[in-house]
Length: 443
Image: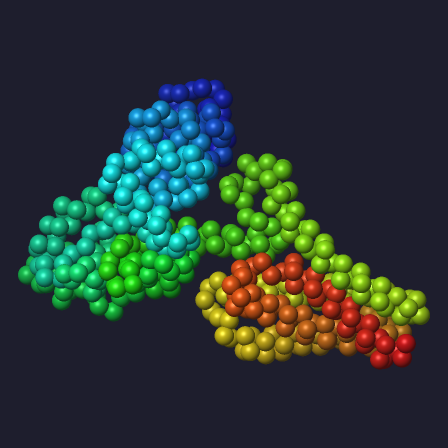
């Protein structure tokens, strides 16, 4: 593996070969491997990079690793590095590092860069305003294509992207967008106002960053114009930032669906203490919620004493209900993340999941009759079959509805997904099982 090779070179202190190896690697590849070494090795590798590549690698790193790099730099190198960062990457760094480091970053900036960074930090946390780049090329609608090309040549080097060109009016209000391809292939005497695509997609700076990123994905855009409440152009959300936002959101959902808080860095670099503390609160919550199951068993203790064979099928009932609910919850959480469904679709989802659960319940009930007859008798087998049908239907309804209700209440749907649904369905599934036994067995 490449990471083993890098670690070996650091151990052997083979600096000439290491420098040659670094020059042959892409910035993203170096950043990926750099995140796997200790702070001393990270600082050594970083010092061997030339200034331009060092900045490119630095911007690819996570804020925690960026902080490690900054801690080892002298004031001059520190200022050069943070000054060279794109404003949106710098704002992200300041958001996630301690206040002392953030203050040093801002103090090391020129007035112009500090002003741009402060403007981004003025938007709400998790808003797209904090992740957009203000370094864009805006073209007035009265410019000819020839004049617009001159503007792009003059200002393009300072912009983060020139693939999407915003066309604005006198008040810097966005009236349309044009691609670089449109510009270079259009007749030079055409006006930008005529060339611009007026049926464009944009987002407000106060919109949720994940929403804006998924909007880009759905519209197949390289860059998304960001405007204020009066449609004045503020910046662009670029494709690289959109991909990072979606990846981060999906990673967070994956962790929370398994009952854990997301990790800030690589799994192998996280300490045992960090891994445990990320999982402990959820386990404790689920552990407390599981008390409901104990209460149910305690309430129906007499029924268990009268028909001890009922205990044989408790794991089957609870396991089937938990798995059915988890499947429904996972499907709905993912559909919510992709924008396939919304909270207002709750009645539709409820009806669909109820039918899915019932169908699954019928299939499992048929198998359950055979299992129940083999281990007990036909009468108890009917209790198991009817319970499986009802529990599957109920679990699918709960699993499908809880994420939608959470979304409606402003709670992350992933928080109330698989583990929480399974715990709830365990307790309610047992109630269904024992009540069914009372009716059929007459106990």
